[in-house]
Image 1 (cartoon, rainbow, N blue to C red):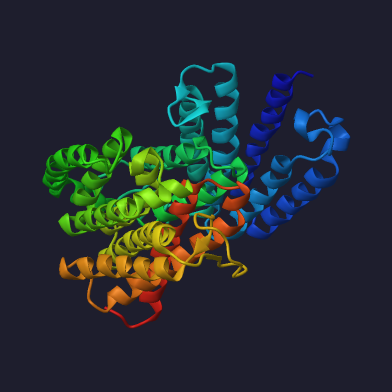
Image 2 (image 1 turned 45 degrees about the vertical axis):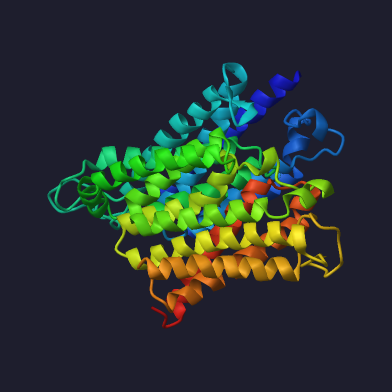
Length: 474
């Protein structure tokens, strides 16, 4: 069988297994988990014997094992365990994994077409296929599964509301058509996950789609549609102001060499969204992070260049840097805009920026002025610029950078003075987590640097949320 034939056969099985998501309408969580365990054992020990290895790619045939085929049912089991009380969400993520990822591969290989600008190995046709099949399939399976697990509203013929969320049923005031709302929500989630899947991250798609799919749908359940619609109508002028402010500043940032063209475009969009969702105080944190990052990158640049560890393109940040460091703050701003916990998510937003500042400043200052560098995993001394390496000088500089972000957040009214403790604490935890990832996965080229930056801001934001939930800070 040709490599293309093998791949298409493999994807046909991958897509076909997505039919199991529709069975969650009738299965209990325990039954579904049991079937997933059986599927794991089957894929580990029997599938290649029964198919004669026809599902194995050329590079897998010698070892008679495929990590992707083994991980697929493990991902499904994880979804069932995570969403054991919301199986419609487990089904939706499963569909993204089966139909979205599967059809993206098939159409991308058969139709091909223009390549994605951020990954020449992927095409626009595959990306759009992920959104179409994954988004629409998720919407269908959500309603299909809900129909069996929710009561019917007496006399209305509608499925009972399972909670005011992106995937909620009828709005109480009838202001939003539930079908359109569900489709938009699922397509947005599919677009986010499809974008992440299209990146060259070094992580298996089954893991990546499961992780980001579960996160996207879980966060979507926090959104209150009525609040979102009302806020969008009342705050449209905020987005207009944000756009008017960010366009000239993006041009200035590009002119002074802080960002490249793609970085200016991405930064301008991010700044506009932050201003619209959370107001000028949130945007001020973006500006603070940008100034700190640019200055720390320029400081000692000649020394870093001589060592071969300076930021590429003369220190100009691209779209990848902007998205990796600021996408979590944008999500936090959106949640502050569309939920009833505005205060909590604004603190998370500040913590995400503080984490990004801590990471960038500590890395740049440590590389330029650090006297001793060591790995956080083993405390072994390493050369400056080693992934996952830290220094005392860099850590102290990063801590000051995070503290400055927290102070700006407090002075601007984004959060209270005591919440600054959660912001700085989250930044420290997130940056330490990033150092561990860098010292383990990134050093052996198993994970992309931008994904590591995204992860550390997410951990920083989550840590701040947990601190605020369990400690009496305000």
